[in-house]
Amino acid sequence: MTDLFAGLADIRPSREVMADGAVLLRGIFAATEADLIADLRAIVKQAPFRHMVTPSGHTMSVAMTNCGSKGWVTDIGGYRYDAIDPVSGQPWPAMPPSFGDLAQRAAEQGGFKGFAPQACLINRYVPGAKMSLHQDKDELDLGAPIVSVSLGLPATFLFGRLSRSDKPQKFRLEHGDIAVWGGPARLAFHGVAPLAEGEHPIMGRQRINLTFRKVM
Ligand code: MD6
Ligand code: FE
Image (tube, rainbow, N blue to C red; front, side, top):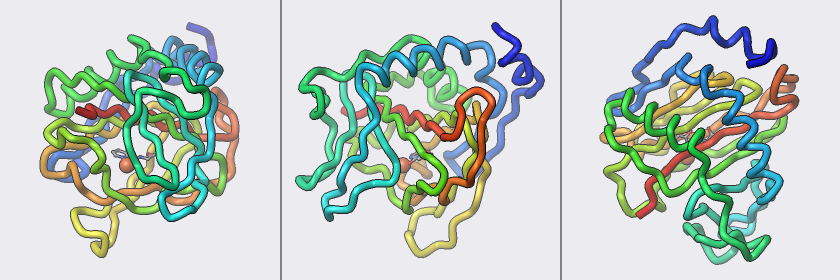
């Protein structure tokens, strides 16, 4: 470990309940951080971030890529999981152990044992980018949770319960924070407020979010 990572060892593990079925974990990430960031850089070289288009024709402000045996894609034809990266025509990069192990460990702390995700959607936000309120419902197995790891600049996560019209609660997500989402919260509406300007000491002027899903 380099000095760059020294500060993170000071974050004590904590667990905050966001709602029934949803927890926010802090401080469980430090030991795997250097490997995870190195693996992330290799994935992005092989499958670069790109701005996908929604079925309604809107280009997303968040840039995306994937790793794992399936990747989440959207285009004018709809949302789906696909084994092939439509940009390269090749399979998505494999999910590295530094990713899969962290996701499984986090899921277990969130109360979901044996989480084995096939897909990791990687979102990149630059200042101003946002994610509108949505439900994650393109997965066949809604019994499995979603594990979401935040890296880089802090964001305001909006958590909107089970109906789009319920006023969302706000949670600050910082570098290394992990949200675990399942059970009664699995179909809650959620989103990310426009990212504020900033420069993160390790990740630079961006936020990266890894969301792990069991697809099938
Ligand atoms: C993000 N996250 O944090 C977007 N979905 O950048 C999500 O859309 C999300 O964080 C399901 C569960 C957790 C999440
Ligand atoms: Fe989502």
